[in-house]
Amino acid sequence: MGDFTLLGSAIFLEKKDNILMWFIWFITLLITNIIFLNFIVAEASAIYATVSENLENYIQQQRADLVAEAETLIPNWAKKEKWFPKYLITRKVVA
Image (cartoon, rainbow, N blue to C red; front, side, top):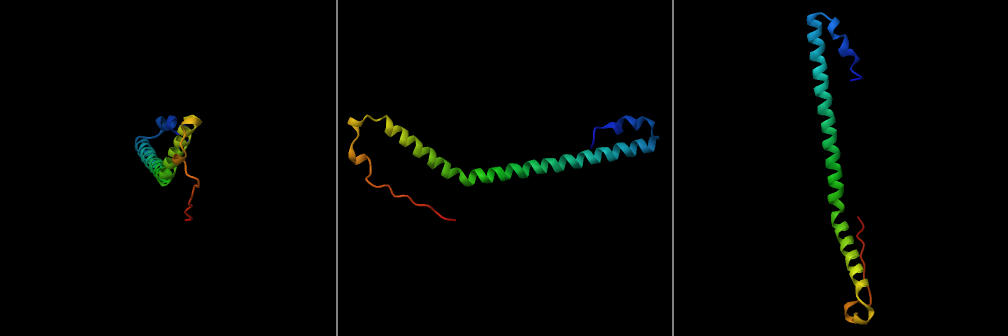
């Protein structure tokens, strides 16, 4: 679209050319807005897909962090051995 310097010279055109210039300008503006809005929607959809893909992992990580923080707040004399496992088994899913 440029810096719209062409619009100032529209007063020097004949009536038919002036109408044609404004029509082409409006159509160009409309098409570029549609293209840019389509791009924004596509990017928002891609970001949403990425976030929803990793959401469960993020929730589990936050839950584990909260549990670890809560365990540090328990004084040593109040901790019971049956609350804490001797072994921690982890599993990693390879996709």
